[in-house]
Length: 338
Image (cartoon, rainbow, N blue to C red; front, side, top):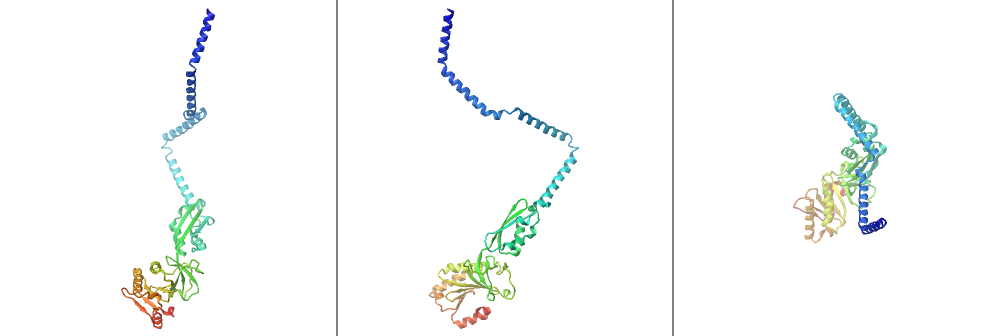
């Protein structure tokens, strides 16, 4: 009986095992998931024994040092004061007086965005900033030094190249006219702020401008000198641009600026000369010329008129006789109209 009972018990256990195998499988999977989850989170929750010991030891030393300083702050007061003063003085010396941060001439780079500015003159202009602390360099100061010799410069960008370098990018005013002087063989371009720059040829097809100024006839001329005062340049630009807009089919031969008289003469390819005054109403003068031309059957292209005078507000004078007109112009403007 005992043997038969053991066999029956074994069979019942086997039956229970097979009945519960699905439950056992799900339980095993669930345990496996929990194990994986715990292993992923364990680096954040647990710390290796050596690392934990080291961190606690470091915190202990730091805390001990803080406690010692706190308990003896009266004794270390002057020491802290002297250390602070030393650090401040040392920092000022390193930043402003030490040679490490002083601008080196070999580390200065100057670039230009056009061909007008002379790089060699630019390097010479900023010689005063060499061996100066990089932290003392100011953009306005550099700009003033550059424009002392080249007034055509409009804008600069200064970048500090640590520890002892500078990069300067120069932008110039745009060239507006190709300039000639009546008694000089040299030719120049003039920028939008009235600065003359030597130029051998009219490479950019600028409008031709004769500059009549007695101060330039008997003196040696250097580049980057003011040819026309900056406040009068807008009148020249308006006269050129508005005339071309108002008379798009008429070609101009040249423009002439008389500095003493402050007048602008526009010579057309048809032979007509238009006399304008430099004033705020220069566009109105050209517009009046347009109206007068429309009422008089396009006299501009007829070739019958030598010059038309728009200088007097509300009045228009024309001259047709070639000899008389030349004499009138020569009497007022000298040998330019010879």
